[in-house]
Image (cartoon, rainbow, N blue to C red):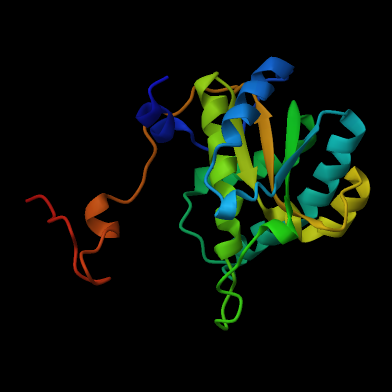
Length: 215
């Protein structure tokens, strides 16, 4: 698959077929993922592929209450989201059926392999993720290239300690994301909806657009 097409059509898959994902497909995806950029080439990311039914159910049982609380916040207006109602509905279906996806890939990262330069700025620290999430995106793109769908979620990181115990994750590793993986039940999107470049790219300053809006 051509790279740009993969980038434009690797949406969040929330409906999966029950077919198992072969090991060789996962190996190709992990092999590509490891070339994602990371600070100092420390390679902090480790992966756990969960396919056992009992473990998947345990992860899903942890996930569902967190999602439902978030969903209630959306419904009651205390959580502001720009997602369309159908997207929220699809996300609810995903949460209800997480334990049934063919595989849940848990993304772990070694704390000593991260270098967050923003932790003293008095706001949410995010820089450490630069050594994690590019590899996750590579993984999802490599799956897409093979016709496999994925859904990245970070909600379950709220239950990191219980996930750590369930999957025997060492204390020096954190959980950074969970990726549902499987063959999609529905076709891949032909085109994802995103803000146009005229709205998101500045020239020299934040408020000065680099590209003029087409007349």
